[in-house]
Image 1: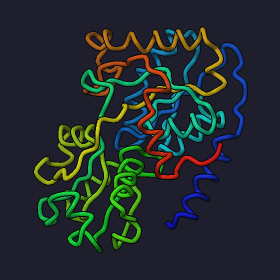
Image 2 (image 1 turned 60 degrees about the vertical axis):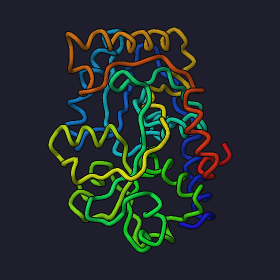
Image 3 (image 1 turned 90 degrees about the vertical axis):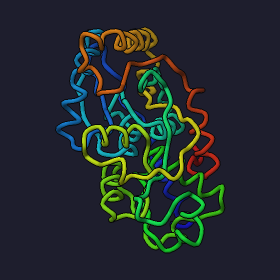
Amino acid sequence: MNLTRRHAASLALGSLLSLPGPALAHGAPLKFGVGMFQPDREKNDATYRPLAAHLAQRLGRPVELRTVDSWEGLAKSLANGETDLALMGPWGYVLANHFAEAQVVSTILYQGKPEYFAMIVTHPDSGVNSIDDLLGPKGRGRNFAFGDKGSTSGYLIPVHEFQKRGIDPEKHFARVLYTKHQAIQTQVTAGQLDAGADYNRNRDAMIAQGLITAARSKVIWQSAPLPNDAFAVSAVLAKDVALVKRLQAALAEIGPLLASQPNLLPANYTGFVTRDNSFYKPIRDAGLATGKLGAR
């Protein structure tokens, strides 16, 4: 995709995200959107139902859970009123904030930390041992997979890294794919893909679940620390200060509750910490640097 088409895509997304959402009736069900963190929708819904139930109990309002297939789609749904609350990737949050003034209220913790890493993986038989190999003559003409275009680690951060090194992936690689993180790891470890973008939490989880083996997933580049997934609210809901405070309190309770209710979050997730929009500045900066954040 050339720069003009990318700019047009950014503007198109901006127009979608700027659509006003309906005002929330007091006591109406809250629509809670979550990204596709698990391999399939059924498992994803089952994983996050306990969290939705906890929030409903603490907020005194029904919470309707829905899984959204892509990060880009979740950003749009939070902006246009299809969802009121969202647990979403950092780049999706920055898009929704930039174009529709969605607001983060908390950040999820992974093994006690509010940050994670983007990475690029290959398989041990690829002959590619570093990002310099991948972006040099050894990598030219190979195939490469990004996550969907709403993904932080799967798209924005590796694209930014390529840009800093003067590489246009559409020209450097013979084939560029856009797919889900789980599919990237599966295809890389099977030797069906030369390399792809992922993040440490996904790779760790897939290894722990026996979906891939560590020996077949070779990390050749890792980013600086990135802010973890955001728990965000729509611009409409953000105006209800009292509700936002109750929501933050409900999320802060989850860490201590995990000792007795471990199903509130997936394995290795250890709670939430209150954060504001400034925590996501590194993602916003990358979006601006790559031209992915257009005019509001």
